[in-house]
Image 1 (spheres, rainbow over the protein chains, first blue to last red):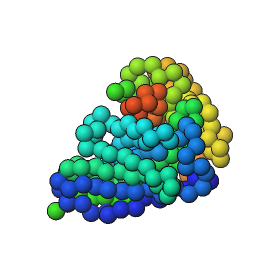
Image 2 (image 1 turned 60 degrees about the horizontal axis):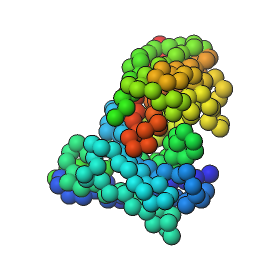
Image 3 (image 1 turned 180 degrees about the vertical axis):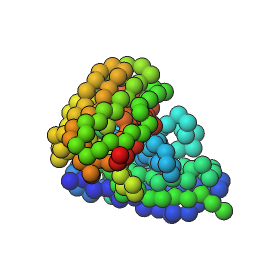
Image 4 (image 1 turned 90 degrees about the vertical axis):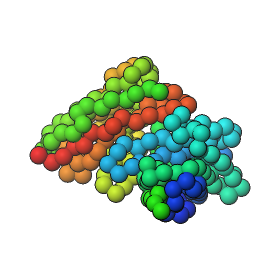
Length: 120
Length: 108
C-alpha cells in the first residue's frame, strides 16, 4: 500500500511562493511508469491537475500554470515537491499529492490533502 | 486541452436505483478515461480506470463503459454510501490531464 503525505505552510501571502512537499512511503518510489503528481481543488470546484514529475525526472505542468510551477524530486528521501510562484487568492485550494501509475495512468493513491490559503 | 463534459451536473436518486453518469470528451481519448468518487472532506477515490476496469476493492455494482469520446459510469443498486460527487478524468494527453466538472448524486 502506497501512502502519500503533504506538508508545508497552510497560509501564504499574495505574491509569495507556495511550497509543498510530499513524502511517499510503501511501494517503489523510483519504479517505472509512475507519475508523481500534484492536483488542487478549490472549494466547490472540480479537481485541477497542476503537474507531474516522471520517474525519469521529466516534468509537465498544466499550461495555465506552467509559467509559475516547478516540480522537483528527491528520490533519496522518497519526496517530491511543488513550488507555485506569484500566488493570488485564486490559488487558495486543497492541494493533493497523488500517484498516477499504469497504462491508463489513473490517480490510484492520494494524499489526504493540505488546505493552502492565500491571504495577507 | 481536451475538454471533459459530464452530465448531468447533479441528480437525485433513491437507495436501490440504477444511476448513469455520462462523460464526453472534446476529442477522441481511446480508453484513457478514469472515474473517481469524492465524499465531502475527503480525497477522490479511484473507481474505474481505462474506461471499464474496476479498481481493486471497489464494489461490483460500479461499472464503466465507452470508447473514443463518450463514456458512462453506471451504479447498480445504489447504496447509502454511494451518495457523493463523481468525476471523470482523461489521461490520453500526457501533457495536459483534465477532469470533468463533476456529478453530484443526492438522496431523493
